[in-house]
Image 1 (cartoon, rainbow, N blue to C red):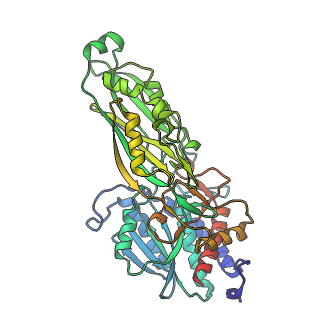
Image 2: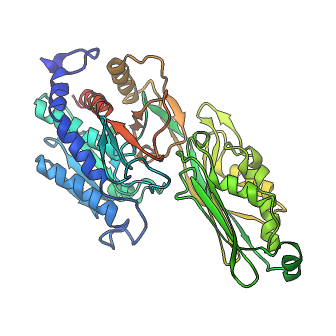
Amino acid sequence: MESEKGNGEMNEKIAAILDGYRDEMVEKLQEIIRIESVAVMEGEVGKCDAPFGEGPKKALEYMMELGKEKGFDVTNYDNVACQLDFGERKDDAVGTVGHVDVVPAGGEWKYPPYGGELHDGVIYGRGAIDDKGPTIATFYAALAIRESGLPLSRNIVQIVGSYEEGGYFPCLHRYLEKAERIPSCGIVPDSFFPICFSEKHFVNTRFTMMTAGMDAGTQDEKTGLILKSIRGGDAINIVPSWAEAIFTDSQGNEVKRVKTTGVPAHASTPEQGKNAIAMLLEELAQMDYEPRDICEGIKLLPPLVCRDVTGEGLGIREKDETGESTNNMGLISYENGKLDIDFNARLPFSLETEDMVGRVKKALAGTGFSVEMTLNIEGFRVDPQQEPAKTLIEVYREATGDNESKPFANGSGSYARVLKDFVPYGMALQNEPLLFHVENESISVDRLMSVAKIYAEALYRLAR
């Protein structure tokens, strides 16, 4: 019987059931990608029908309707999270948790970012990898286990959240507050294989400068330029692909516009992108304009924040077994005399948050910029030799034959930070560029299917 197979064999019955769902899985992923589900805080959870916006609510409803269609128990937690129960209720459960919100689709796309188009066996669209594709894959993985009829000692549930990209997970906190039973362990399909054993500390900071006013004489005699506005970036956790500054004359007429174009990447791997805000600041640092204090402040920034992605210029570069620090300059705004620059840092465990902020303040001394920490989420670690991580690694190796990729740490911020004994598990591979948060995000149908089989085998072994 399949239930008696050793750990060295993948369950053929479950895999065959998944193969039968191939076309349907593609269709469902296309449909959910077509829901533009960028999350924004529009109201208080529990006090508003769609606290993160209509898009995330609609995507969450899509997963709940899919669960009901397949005959599963569905629990809605205030339209911000849900739980799909895939079998008879038992004393314990194994879980999988994904999210249906996405980052904005900035930049230039070959195919519409919310089109879910299929070309040459590849599905394109925002969320294909992060995290709608994995959410669909784990749903059908659990469905196949149920339809196999194989005996289980644990139930299998899927948790779905609708506000993950903002970094502090209010949807999942609401689930934890209200759920009657929390799965004792599980997977978070929102990272790399074979597992991510640690995620770094996650710290957002904002640099701010307020102008004291313009020196009209300097403006008239030297340049005639007045800085009207600066804008750049789509989200703090994306390497910005665009930035621009607009200048006027003393009568308010636009006389100059400086634009830069970069290459987007996930903020945890900023070395894979090209930061348009850094490029813009480098150009502005070579110019003279009013307000003079803003001009002089910007001239000081390039060696501090523009020329590396590790935070070395700010004195926060550290490295240990959990990785090296990164610091992404993700957003910039200047209007009405106020300049704000927002950074997202991912810190190894050897650098504590308070130490990091202290170092940044020291580096900024005398520049005219103040610094404020706007978000702080502690990282986490699991032991790769302990369960459930041990089984997850084993399943990945057996399914792929990849014995070279090692459990590793990175700077991503997943739901594993708040769910005990949940382990980040795929669907990205370490030997390829990270496709999260980039233009032309996509997943091949073959990858979707192969990963769904890995998830199915992993959930089955944890639950049997």
